[in-house]
Image (cartoon, rainbow, N blue to C red; front, side):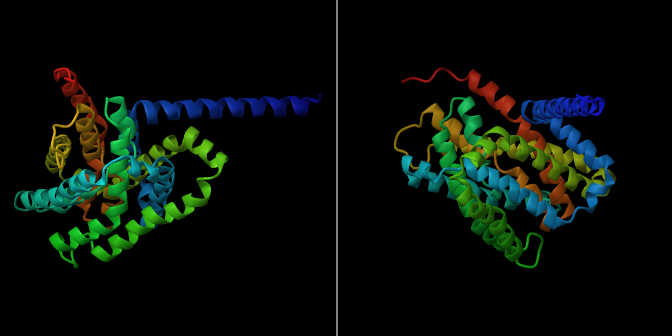
Length: 331
């Protein structure tokens, strides 16, 4: 073996070791310590000005990639395993009526970001909610049914309610919202259809899908922060107010979800059902809201939805503590 070959092999080995170290580091930050990932994402948004130059269509494309990975987790056959009537009733209450109520309450108190509150509550259940609710003792089947129903109806519900509450000429315009949501949700579904039968695609998603998805979400957060940095730093007391409101809306979302498990049922639900509905309600798709606020909303809408990423990652801690304090379930 020549000296050049030895050097080439050594460099290739060093490169492999570096990539392995980088992958493990990303896995540690993104999947094991999401709060740290959000902090690093915010720092990038504040310190890398070129992120603000990424056009809105780029953010929409990034979210489409996240949705493509999400379709690998959303299995329509799950709907055959649950009764749809209670799920649809809960959807109507949590994802249609509650956003209208919360916007009506927020508008006279905080008109500047009431539309951001509306957008937050309109967002569908997050694709990660089934796995997280299962870790807490919930039913992933119920949570997955709620994710599917809310995701499929979101492109039609969000523009309709925004038109009803905000008007057609205001922020969050209904027609562009409809077109964006349909492209973000249904175009990835069309791409997914031929891929779902590919063992290679399934293996890649299982090995790397969640990591890539969360990395993209953190990148979107950094882009929006970079874009809205002047507005965020211009009024720090307002920023503190938005942060307090963000924790409040998550408390409401979890509470309504826990109560919503009783809708359409003659007997009290099991704790697993309460947990599933609470997680589907509280662990909503904030990343989609961040992107829509960035594309169409006001600066305050974008800032509020970005801030909501923090309690999204932290709210499970007090929720789990409350579950531990509940008395054992009687059978």
